[in-house]
Image 1 (cartoon, rainbow, N blue to C red):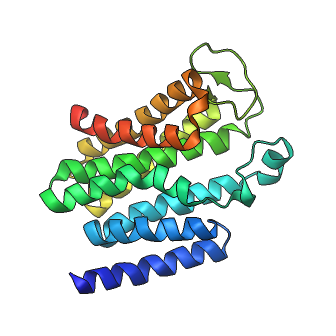
Image 2: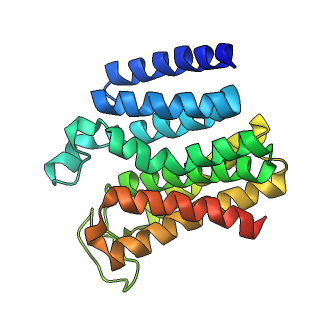
Length: 231
């Protein structure tokens, strides 16, 4: 057990340090990411950490695409795209809980829920970052009324497609790594992850004041819960 924790700390510490140096996370984001990473690695090993890394690296890459344009319109991620500890915990808190339960119960469903929650976080990031670059204005998911880019609950065709692809990519990485049991289960995970982002858009449109971190947490929780109903 001790050796596993040491290995988790070394791998996660190196990854968090590199993410900080490359400008992917802030200092407190690196600390929060370290805590999340150690928990995931300790519970699900390198396979679970690989799924987490896909979200972190993929989300950061999408944030940087067209960043100057987003910043010029006042809709870019703050702090130069560096994500903080609150963002890490909001996006990955449900994943950590699923990883702990998967390790304690050896349940394939909790492992699949872990993948779905991170797939939802990745898909939500993809929808936001790609959607903000769309030429046509997005529409509010509840009324289909055109709204400015960056509006809570706004959706666009390019952003939705990017989110769907991110959900599918995460699900099939989980399948390739053995965290998802079968191709059919991977489709369930991808569907749950994508539906989590739909729920995120609805809650963002209906209750915009609750904040981005709260909607991110809700998004991943919905995705993880749906795995149990769709499995």
